[in-house]
Image (cartoon, rainbow, N blue to C red; front, side):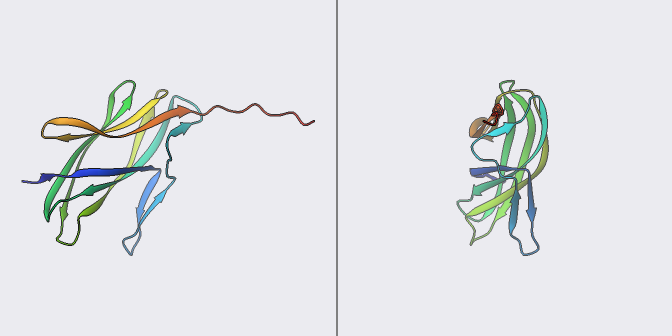
Length: 137
């Protein structure tokens, strides 16, 4: 039976690619917030998660993504991996997921461990405020 992985970090971006040499390449990395020009909007997001493994063996992470304030579940992820003797941290790639964002709120990751969900990551969703154009003086 697989053990529960401990998700330590989540990176949100537009796309994650894996190069021929094994390097991961993240495109369009989001900072502290998801800022949209207008809402509602549909965007595609990919995710890179770092999980820790206490010892070699099989691990899994059940992660649900929600959009707040509606608390709509937008994705249920079952991420599995095998940790080897020399590795205690693993990168997990979640390919592009379409998100229909209705308004301001947050993208929330919750990991299910032993039947209970705990929040592991939260990123606010904001609508950009356009600055009025200044007249030339």
